[in-house]
Length: 204
Image (cartoon, rainbow, N blue to C red; front, side, top):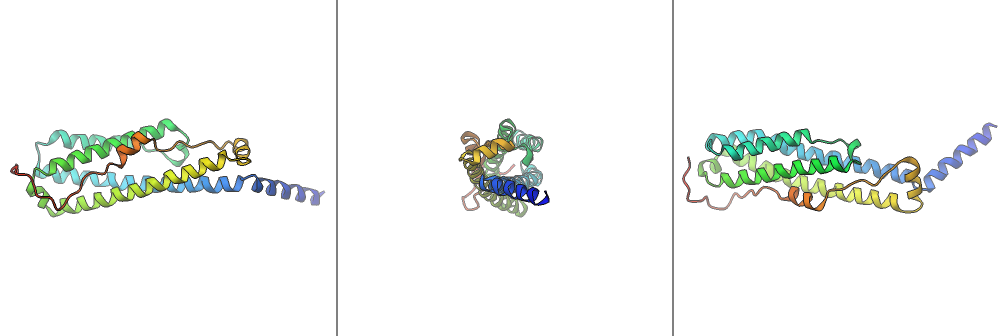
């Protein structure tokens, strides 16, 4: 009897492996790992915002509207975070994308405003924050692209026979991915230009 049970268990394990169960599990973990890296890089950017806003405020106090937009956009990013367990929820992913896109746009406007303040552009702390922001935007792009690729590979895997039968049996679903319109907004990194001359406008 024990031998029969062992053989039955072996057949089940072999069958699951042959129908893609292990491959699906592995790729699902890859997707979660890549998502964690996406969140890490977006959080890195969000952490730069308070110091950046305070530095700009020191030279451009009456640019209150732009500074408020950046601060509010950062707050929305904080409330729109999703975990790897929420990745099958397209609405949550859409909200996350929209919040990140809004922060990207607000930061872009802040960088444009900074061009009107030569003293701000010459400030060592501001230059350091600009460099960190530029590096973080590059990391975000890399992490996001890797996540997109991992989701595409996962979705292809669970749609392919006989993996699709296994996926259906164990409740694996196609995962939503970054949509084109929101990806474009998010991927528009704030302009960080150290070399262009400052406009003729005087510092306030």
